[in-house]
Amino acid sequence: MANIQNWDLIQTNKTNGTAKLKCPVCTETRKNKSDKSLYINFNSGVAKCFNDSCNALFFKDSVQKSINEKNYTLPSQQWINYTKLSDALVKWSETERKINQYTLNYFKITEEKFYQPALNKEVNNIVFNYFEGDILVNKKYRSGNKKFTQSKNGKPIFYNINEAIGQDEVYIVEGEFDVLAFYEIKIKNVISIPNGANDNDNYWLNSEKYLKDVKKFFIATDNDESGNNIAEKIAQRLGRYRCERIRFVGKDANDDLKSGVLEKSIYNREKYPISGTFTSEDLIDKMISLYDSGLPSCIEVKNSAFGNLNNIFKLMLGHLCIGTGIPSHGKSNFTEWLVLNYLLENDFKASFFSPEHLPLELHYSTFCEKIIGKNYFYDIQGTPKINKLELMQFHEWANQKLYLTSPDVGEFATWDWVLEKFKEQIFSFGINIFVVDAWNKVEHTGTKTERENISKTLSRLTMFAQQNNVLIIVIAHPTKMPKENGTYLKPTLYDVSGSADFRNQTHDGFCIYRYFGDSPYTSFTNLKTKFKFQGEIGQEVEYGYHLPSGRYYERNTTPQDYNLIDHLRQQKEKITQDYEIENKIEPATLNDAFGDVNDINYCPF
Ligand SMILES: [Zn+2]
Image (cartoon, rainbow, N blue to C red; front, side, top):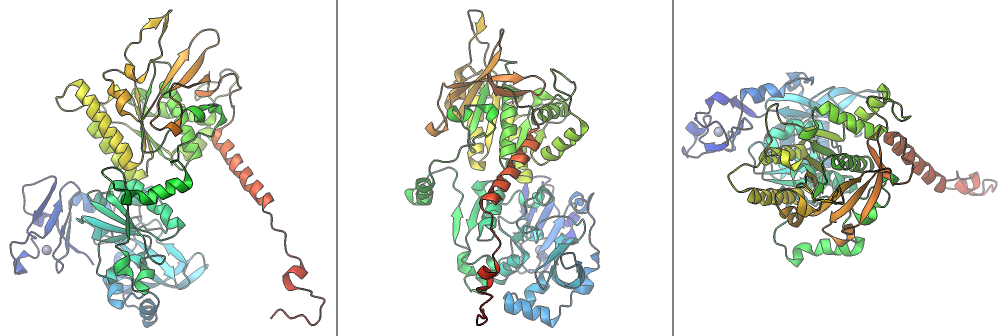
């Protein structure tokens, strides 16, 4: 059990940042009385003594209180009554898992009778007790035949989270036994995701304060497809620049412990390269995979309403894109329509920072209109108003997909603030796409010239997109455009206010331009794509605008009138049905299964 101490014992005037001090608990009893073994993080409100025989943990009052906040039901804290383990369990653990009794005791593993829903009865279980500080916040029950259940409404958090506090490096594994396996080779700074290979926001949110200052993560999830998928998602949240992937020889850490190779296999590491200097050796794996699987993947939009767009313009994760257009020509609307379709068609999440579109609920209503295909407020042009059921359907979808960012009332956002928020959102929610609408609504800090500020911010944004493998779309207004024959000229990236760097530094860019008159339409123009395979600069696609829903559709076609969530579900169901029809397995006949059953001499065994 962690040695939890009172925060007030820490004597210092410092109130933010981090510090190393002498430990108030163990210094008196130590030979080296000047060792600064206590690491303190004032911002997170946690401290830890790195003297092994002390191991004291300190939590600020506010942090201690937050452990037991709001909506969770903590298990009974009387767990200690159960700590005597049966011989059978200890023997099983030592022979089957190579985990010895000392380790089981160290992690406060217990053995309890508990109802297993999958078995529909109460059975004996090995129990992983989840501690945050000295509070038991959750329990996971594993039966002899590998069924799992957990405390009802317990607090989701990484297993062994206390050991991540104050560490520069942390290993992340996919099961509690893997944490125990690492301990067998004397590595303690290991945490496990709580629910097998699921990825949900809550345990990330609850663990954030303990993990945000860690410098390096070794992602040691299972060596199989689902382990690879979860590793990708973890790296995405933590920032690829501070992650490395560990490849086990067997399936997981416990496997490699059993085969005696764990001490070696934890050095079998792959970087998630992002930027910097690389040799051919660093790149050879990627070059082979590029050779085998072709060009890097762009995000293609599948919805036919976009017409020819994929042929002239495709975006990519890791890029910065600038969208421009004359005010009221529809650049925000088109961007939102495009991003919503990306979200529908891919396993992506997006965050919008759109101070020009407040209040937030009004902004959300325009997303709802585009998804449902109707107007939020009125029956217009023969299209009925959205009903409450559709509103709830949108809510259910958007709740997992769409995040809005807004500074506090009266505050003006700076780029420092925006990027800090984005970093938090990548961690807490796993965001892949960020939209900033618009550039001029975010302030620069410092005293440089406007030109220098623009250049610096654009470099930060491109770097951020690359490092985190996210797409950032920034909407930027052009300078006042000159007129030709009474109409404004179409802006290019050189016309974006302030600097030619908007053309030079961004990866990609587009312009939305509206043609007025008797048959008005909107054009999308590729102003820049970094790579040839992304499209063709200067090409355009023409769209009509459906006023009730705010959707765009290929010019001179009929706008889609359906709800996109329903439509997508029907398409998925159809694909599954077609697959089942094509791959239908005919039941075996008696003869197929057992040979000639009429042959009295026939014996299958
Ligand atoms: Zn100490």
